[in-house]
Image 1 (cartoon, rainbow over the protein chains, first blue to last red):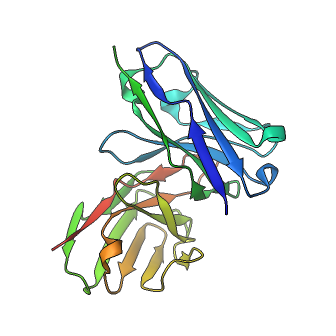
Image 2 (image 1 turned 180 degrees about the vertical axis):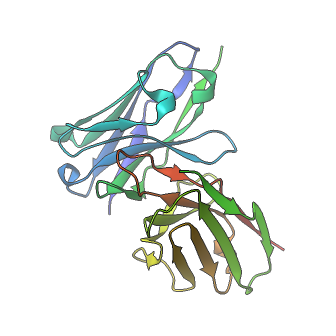
Length: 119
Length: 108
């Protein structure tokens, strides 16, 4: 069965940085676009970023452009989200998800990693 | 594209029918997905292409619509169906995947 396991969440001060990882298994990682979706406490879902199979295309929601960077390591079936200049409003559970197609819905999700931005 | 779900909360008795609505601020063709999320869990894909059930999703879940108006119907609510449901459009490129605010289906 497809598995996506996030790690790297935690508490960070405003202006700080954090790197999330997502380990993928039981599917051909190189065949799929991958994405990050976040959910602030008690709120709805927000798409954050996605990345093409070979990493050559990356897209971001406007609120994180210039601060967050999505990447992947196909040799190790891993997805990453580098988050810099973190703000309180970035506090959320971050989910790694597999995208179906280029213009995508998301068919498998990880369990999420909590990122808290607070002084 | 803004996705608006209604109602915000739906109170339904087990065995009853539930109809959830999702409206897009502009046409998204049939590029609409529905997800179910239970407390403390990740979302689960239910429907894509507005009306196609994902593998393993019970037949009591059905989706309809195209363009700007969509519905998710749960024909006979089971205890495990009480959850929050989100719609998501995936019509634009470059991507601007947007979710609705969710409908919470609670026990009446």
